[in-house]
Amino acid sequence: MSLLLNSARPLRRLLGLKHHAGIEPHLPEGALAVQCALFDKSPERNWLVAPHQDLSIPVRDRVESPACSGWSVKEGVTFVQPPTAADARGHRQSDDEVTCTLGRGDALLLRPLLLHASSKATSDLPRRILHFLFGRPLLPFGLRWHHAVQQRVGARARPVASLGE
Image 1 (tube, one colour):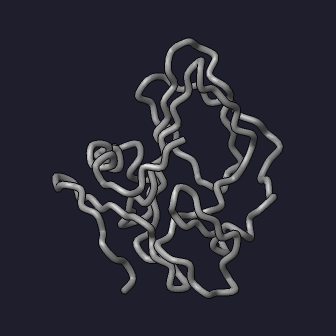
Image 2: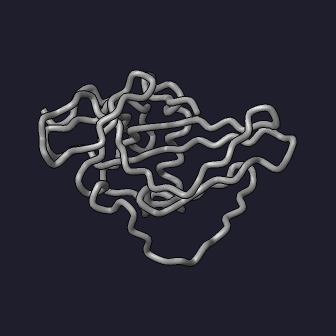
Image 3: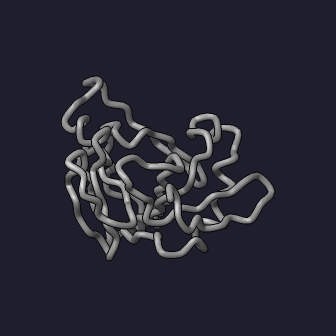
């Protein structure tokens, strides 16, 4: 996995997806792209991702708040589990399992707290996944997104220097 957080360049080309008719209605009003991770599976680099929930979000700085937990640093970026995510740990909504098979260029939208997994690649062809995290512009408890990119239809993507100040 490679975190593509320190530059808006990878996001600029792909943020048009945010305005796709099948995606935009599912995003919060004013949603910002706050994380993009590249997963590049191949026969040489292949792995299984066990069932999990995405509980942590990338933030600019650690804040002193008893409501925030699970602090970590990955590739120089600070992550935290805000209370809405922390309260959902271990909760499953259903025992039903659904397999989603996607074709080239397809998009799968899911809420990060949905229990999800990823199987090993079964083909000799590369399997690349761009995993975007969109979030609301303002975070609680004085938290600020580590990196946020905002785009309006027809406009160039621009990094948001500072939110919530």
